[in-house]
Image (cartoon, rainbow, N blue to C red; front, side, top):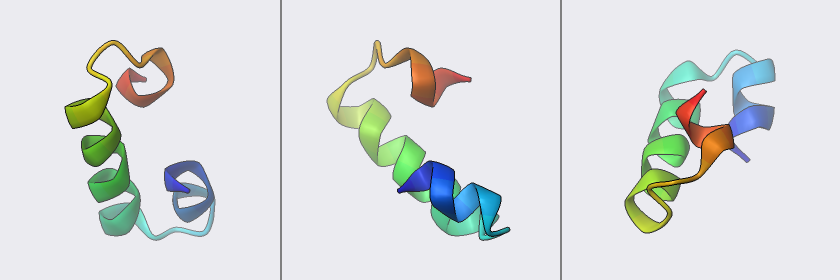
Length: 33
C-alpha cells in the first residue's frame, strides 16, 4: 500500500504505512529503502 501511495504522490500516507510495517517487521528490507 505504501508503494502505491508513493507512486500517486501521497507521501505522508506512504511514510505512515512504511513506518507501521517497520514497527512490526523491523528487518523488512523493502520498507527500509
